[in-house]
Image 1 (cartoon, one colour):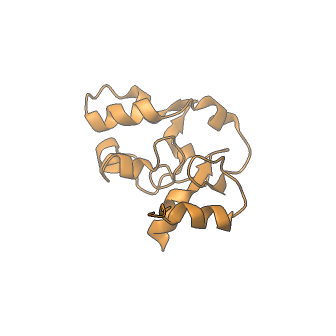
Image 2 (tube, rainbow, N blue to C red):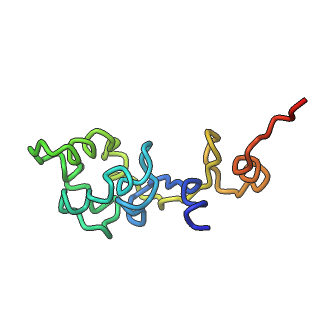
Length: 125
């Protein structure tokens, strides 16, 4: 069941102190661990258990200093949002439920989730 629910859970990063950098769905491209085929942490040196705040050093992403041409590092650099709002935010990270293209919410819309998971079968006449 966890694998079915995971795509619906998104993290709205506040201060970045609880959102997992690699495993949570906090970028527009989904979990970075999935995006990098499970190799991001080994390639970049940022530990697998790092939170988003761990990846920001002096108001910039730690990886911005890298001159590597490694495609995984280039991909990560391209998908990271501006770090300044995160480094200055004192709000907690929020985990929200998102069904399809709907706006994420802190409520569980069971009917919308059910309809999204069930294939819409067109009647045959």
